[in-house]
Length: 113
Image (cartoon, rainbow, N blue to C red; front, side, top):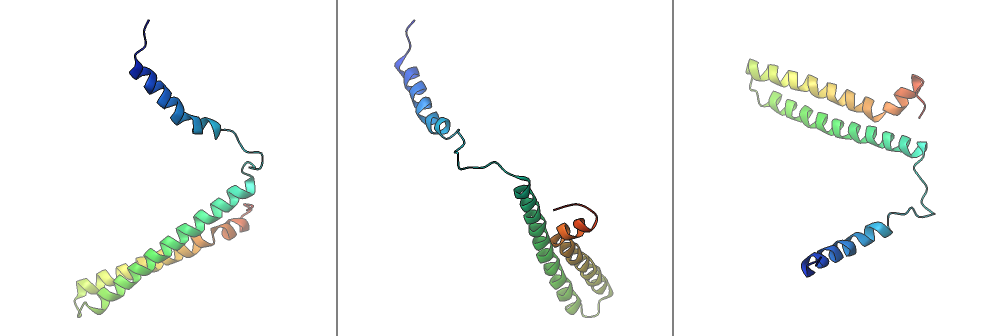
């Protein structure tokens, strides 16, 4: 059974490419596994990031609603659209504030962070 040179080259190249993955697969002794506190910090960070994004989106919609309200020139339909937009924007900002402080709110209900 003869193996072609091309096949040997492919196997050799694959082994050379896989060598760094194999050598880095072992955990270094100084690297500690994730703890519960690390996971808690990640959850806190996610809530704060979601709150920040929701707050920025809410403020943007609030500004758009104010712009529509100012430029409506008394048109009842535009005034109604602007009011609805402003109400939803205020609601979004309230949700953002609650997301930003979600870990504190959950701790009042017994969830330990």
